[in-house]
Image 1 (cartoon, rainbow, N blue to C red):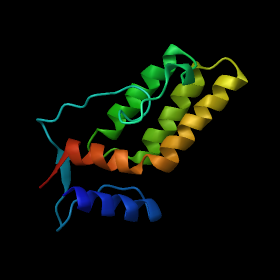
Image 2: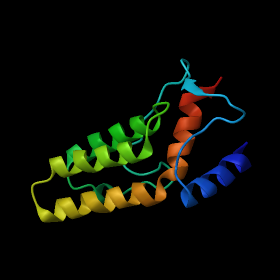
Image 3: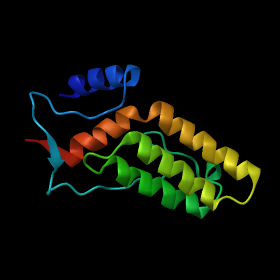
Image 4: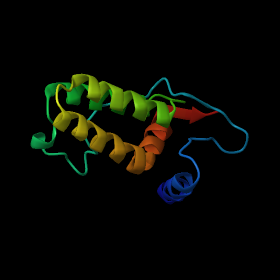
Amino acid sequence: MKQFLVILALVSVALCCEYKCSFSKRAVADPNFRAVANGCGPKIIGVPDKWIPNSGFMTCCNSHDFCYARCNSNKVSCDNSFRTCMRNTCSNKACRDRANTFFNAVKNLGCTFYLIGQQKACKCV
């Protein structure tokens, strides 16, 4: 299954990052799934606290995690909401630049994490 997800992630990056069930099934929310936020950045990477300009960013990061883990969410909408949330916490250009850096990271590198969130949050029926 992991190999399939990796292949799906690579194909989706080239085309469009969208979660789909196979064989004419549809994705519905798994009632047994409970999303968990891990702050800013994938748990395996761990973003240093000094990269997070203010406490509001952490709230935005956690909301973004929950968005990725909401069945049938749209990655582009999750990412755009994430950028808006971060920028709304900023009061200077340096902070807004950091918000754009975080946004570009999820926009360009977040597909696999989005697909993993969808796979966990949805079941195909």
